[in-house]
Image (cartoon, rainbow, N blue to C red; front, side, top):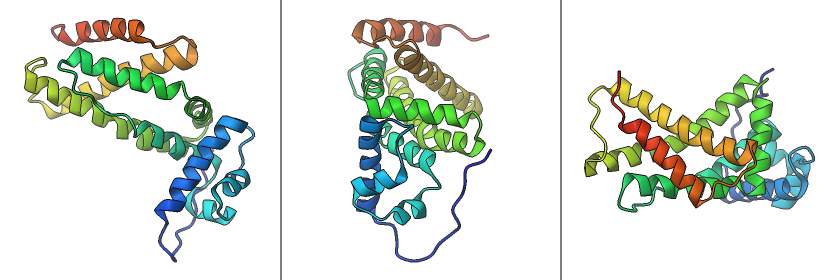
Length: 206
């Protein structure tokens, strides 16, 4: 099953203000209605735009929810707390706080479930959420290398694989902890997780 892709259209340029209102309205609807009851019509009313405006921008509900949730993850920042361990803990605590928000929790779990039978939606999640947030791993690694906490990597392909691996370990652990196990990712858990993560990163390779 593939996502419906709207035909290319010409006309007035997209309004950033309208986009922001629509994405905010989508998150509000996720909180009040949940994913199953959310409709584009309801979002349009909340945002004060015509329903056709949504269809000019998004193929359907799933794509709209992905973008609304992705905007939340764009709020993540890499704090400079003086060490790699402290920086990781700062990011992970932010990530856990976002996942604790009902609009993020409801929206993310729904679109991930839908993406198991929709390749285009899975790719949109990858591009809009996963790939965009790898910026934090890249920045954190560069800062740690500048401090001498991590060794430089001369092999570009190996460095890219390392970024993917670190992202998968962090995101996978936090999502499982908060959304699957429904346990808190509090400071104690985050501290322990970071200790285990860095122990693995400092171990010699094969």
